[in-house]
Amino acid sequence: MRSRSLIVLAAALFIGLIAVLIVNGVFSDVEQRQAQAAEETRQVRIAVATQDIAFGTPISAQNVRLANWPANSVPAGAFSTLEDATRARVALRPLVAGEPVLASKVSGENGRATLSANLPAGQLAFAVPIDAVAGAGGFVRPGDVVDVLVTRQIPGEGASQTDKMTDIVLESIPVLAVDQVSDPNSTDPALGKTATLQVDSFGAQKLALSQQLGVISLALRKVGDPNVGSRSTVTGRDITASRLYIAQRRQTGSASPAPAAASRGSTVPTAAAQPVRAFTGPSVTVVRGTKTSEVSVFHGY
Image (cartoon, rainbow, N blue to C red; front, top):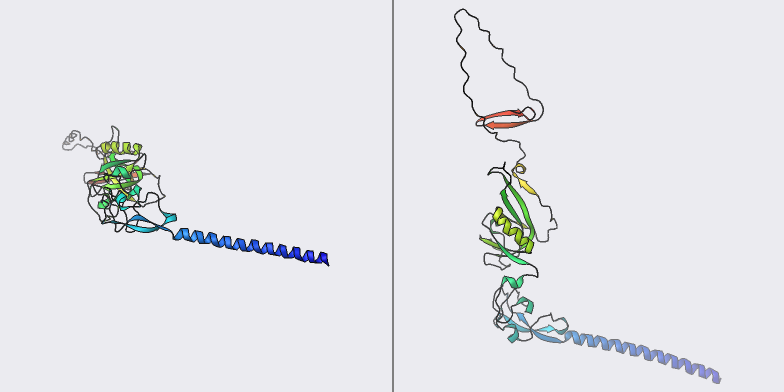
């Protein structure tokens, strides 16, 4: 009887211990959730833009204010006071209303908005001349991506002034500015005279040499287009599928003397007319002045 009581007592103690552990686990989990909720609801005040701020705009109390922000998601470089955010700073990148003002998006104290502040490490800003045609009709704007083409004369002693070739010099190059406008939010077409491109040092060398060799043109490319690397050289032969060309005119020799008139009663044999030889095989069309003729490729003129 006594042993049975001990067994019942031990079982009760064991069940009680298990219940205590379960209750402690439940309360511990509740406390953790409450602590996490308190951390998530805890907020701090950081500087945010009150309106859209364009590149180069001074940061002031008119376009920046302090706003509540979750303490566990404050971005790096955020300003906690208006004095720090507006201390002679300007926007180096466009900001939208409600966006945090970060140290990486504004200049330092007494700084100025310059393109060099936006350049990644190892990148250069290089300006190339453009016009309405070379600049894709004025639709090349800051933030676009372009291919750079150069048209120049084909090298060689046998090339004439009209023998041209076009090469793709660079592909998928970001446009930093057109003339002195570097705002990517400006999408209206404008006829600029220069386009500033973001390239590495080797790309800058290519652009500098291309300006000396020929005429530079820009072609708009879709941002993120994977079809990159298909460079080729285009010449005049690639523009048309026809084999039509103008041959060089031959030197005209002295006229042959007319045959002497036959005396009365004499018989002068007449040379038999030479038959016209028909060309076989491939031929090309030759234009000499206003006359057009077919010439066999294997028989020459």
